[in-house]
Length: 146
Image (cartoon, rainbow, N blue to C red; front, side, top):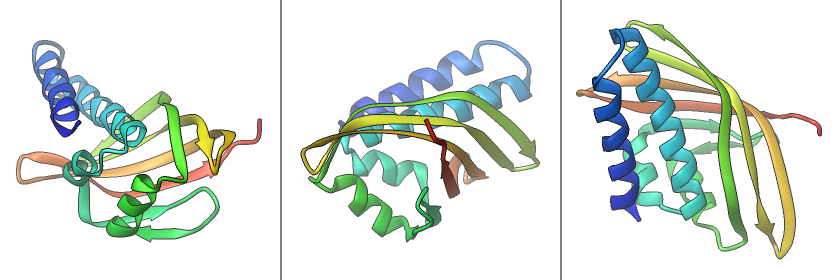
């Protein structure tokens, strides 16, 4: 599955490089990385997530719980949750030198503990361009009531 995610990211990077100005290309690259993250969560592909997330990741879940990278990857791998669909909408990206802040709406549904669930959250992810690649260093989400 990791190869699938890497392929998606690389394909998006090629498409991004083909058109638009630098800001538009970088915006599209961050959106592609957000989409790759969603796909990796849906597939429970922690190896792909490992490539997208910085070692020092700080992850704040919608319930206020705080996780580091190993804890987040373990949560994604948990057999208790089986996401069926994970998507982001209305993603906006702001750039500050080698930092990108992406925000939007995150939707996820599937089964958790054998019961159907649906999540709708507003998220903010902070990406840093490091060693020629973007990695996420911080992620925070807030539950949006239905």
